[in-house]
View (cartoon, rainbow, N blue to C red):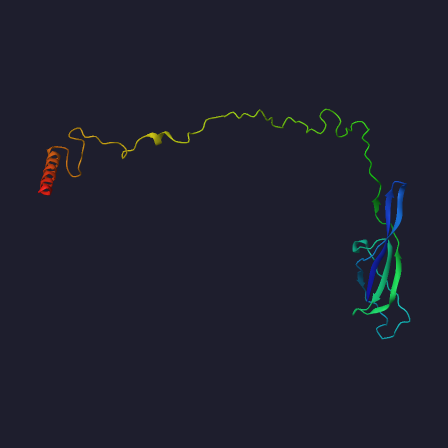
Amino acid sequence: MRFVFTKTVVYERSLTDTSKDPVVNRQALSGQQPTAESLDVDFANPQGKIFKGTNFDFGLTRARGYEAGEYTVQIRTADGADIGGPMRIVLKGDNPVVDRRSITFEAKKKGITKVGEGDDAGAPKKTDDAPTTNYSGEVAPSGSAAPFVPKSAYDATEEEKIKENPKGCGCSVPGLSSTSGGLAFLSSLALLVGVSRRRRRR
């Protein structure tokens, strides 16, 4: 059999401003999820003799969510068929105390400073570990850094250097030296230019 418990009223023990001792308040609940307990109930002995009545008991613990208050109980069979109508039961006991007292702040006591009072009210407290920062607006450089363009960039490479000939007109032809062979090549080149001019005139 299954015993389905639905919590309808909880007995709350609360501390209030009007009483020093806890006060019990009945708080009505709605829409609570039911809790089911299963139990095997015998209605006959092993010989098959049916009892006129039967007694059974089981415990309800706070670990299962039960507390002092009012419940409705519906008895059902294992296949879900209801046996009779719902019953109302009351679970007695003392629930944990809930503090419902109001909280007050008394700023007139010594040692308590209101926000806005004093010269440094609202300002963060300075500590010895806090770093000091200069907000003068000027940034002073510190240390030395390597130049953006290295000095080696200003040195001329071997390809960029101008080659100078100690003799001759300063011209050099690949495959020939700057001696008489080079002068002979230039003179023959001049003769060819003169001959070609004469042919054009004719």
